[in-house]
Image 1 (tube, rainbow, N blue to C red):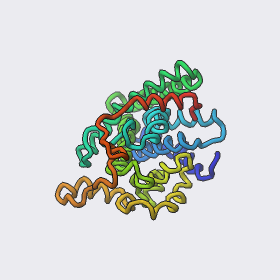
Image 2: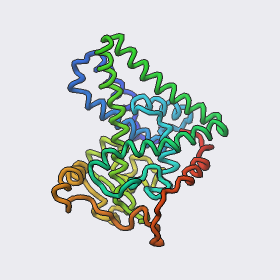
Image 3: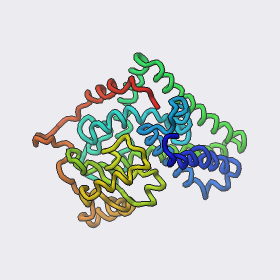
Image 4: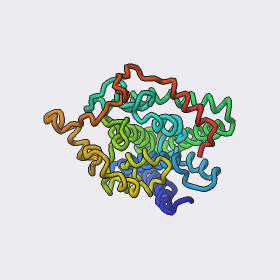
Length: 322
């Protein structure tokens, strides 16, 4: 491994995630008390996949490839998808026009309806860069394309196998229940929550600003559980930095981040933004600085440009997937 801190990553991925699944498969009666643990580990797998694609866990490319495929099983989707949608796109445009994950596609309002449905809107627009990335890999980078296909095979095969085992152990009805609450529902929870986090970390921020382009949640517990994913401003400014170093990066820039974008509690922000703000509007988020659809010249950008997404894929498709 490249960093000692990733021994915790391995503990989560190679021991705890499989162990939680095995325990529930052996005794379905535990699912009613443990389903939320499966949801947490699926979310953690998504964060680990994100971290792995930015800063590979191992020095060996082959081991990194195997590790990425293994993470896909618990995350609920092949982890290569982070590359075209996140590494090559989101980090280039950071919620400005061209970003497939923009928070303001239909409105710049921030309320429970917009935040809750963001997953479905963002998923649709992210599918374009993913398909384009696969097409380009197929024609210009056979090795990368084989890795992509292998991830789909491992991910799909593992979930079909998990479903078959659950049915074989507990019958059709109970087996579906076991699989759904051990793998299926946690996978959807992870995908939805990852995108909700992205929405919360960028809605009403100023992508034209040096340090106010993202919202940071600096609470210690959240960042322990999610491998410093809350330190989002630091991550955007040092995208290749290992997750374990982001606290140090954050401390160097914390004083320069707008106070409304450098928060301690993610849950307090959710409470204020979506439960209290409808009654007390002053508790809701406000646009900080320049809106993402307003170019620095002051000219309003009326159309989301998508051609540049293809350019980003062209620039990165020949890079070997970790």
